[in-house]
Image 1: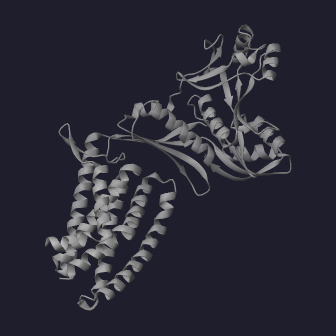
Image 2: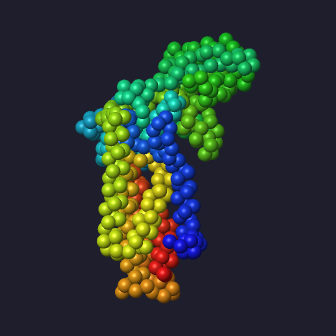
Image 3: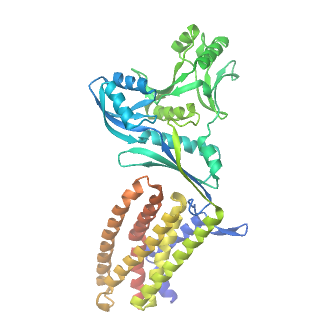
Length: 483
């Protein structure tokens, strides 16, 4: 290719943009040799990297109900009969954080003056997100890298399972990480910044959900101490003078050596503790969205990493390093073979290198750009690799549409006619791309972790193609065929 022709191609801003994005993607991917091995910045899922996955089932249920009684009285009776934490999800659904068969709940609801209308094993989406945050905090605190926590939520909005993937971690260690609780402690300020131990987390028997106090806009979290914990708190408050001057003696809540909450007792609480031990406490966090966020975080800290609902391990798996390397090699071979097959097919159709080479080049540049984006947002597992191969195929299909449209009747059209045909081809491709995106959206939005990678990569590939690489290809072949 003559240098003049190359310059005329690069002058088109669409082509220049592709070149810039390819170079930027190569920087993001950063292929290199380290310790005698070829490596990149690409993040791999458990299919392509050694590690463990755990799928856990929530031992709880979300049920629909009907009753003529006041909700507070009805839920209170149900809670007393079942001895379980129960929360109102919406106007006609309850979350019961303990497992009971449907038959038991139907009987209990009838005895309490109501009727069970629906039964879904699992927890509400809000509780699932809380569990996800707790697990992510624990995993991050322990320094485990490349971890994924995915609640598997159904169309009903109820989450029955949660999947945890830990790269580079054995099965026994993964179970320990998921089940481990942090060390929670409450200390009281004595003089200045000096503090004394009051009680540990085992003295906390229950933790409520974030709520506002009646008649107040202040958010906070209620929690209950056992008798021994309440006695220790009263003893420390009296001993160090917090009952007479609470403002000078903050209570610090410490999780794994880090202070997560510090505040003085209210005057009412100080007065009550001076008379008798108080088991039911309330920690205020502030007003507005910031107060609610702090209340959610405090709830997690008070639980010291304990999940708000029991879980049972429903499935586990471990991918050894040798098998993950084998899968990587298979994926690379599959991708190379797919590229060769596509190239042979296109060359057989057009028999013209000036068409085939730009077509293969622009298609591979699309894959490089896609991988560059994936380094920031998506781990590569077998499903994501399948998405890359699908993008390779659909990309060539759309490039064939452009080529056939602009070379209608086998002739090189004039500049104006070429531009008109290119716009028509791009409009056809845009409709096709929209169809693919709408088809993939449910998989991308639903919490089906094994399929989301395929859907996300496919959608990104289609968007990159329609907005960036297809217009660039149209300009390239316009210059190539003008000879």
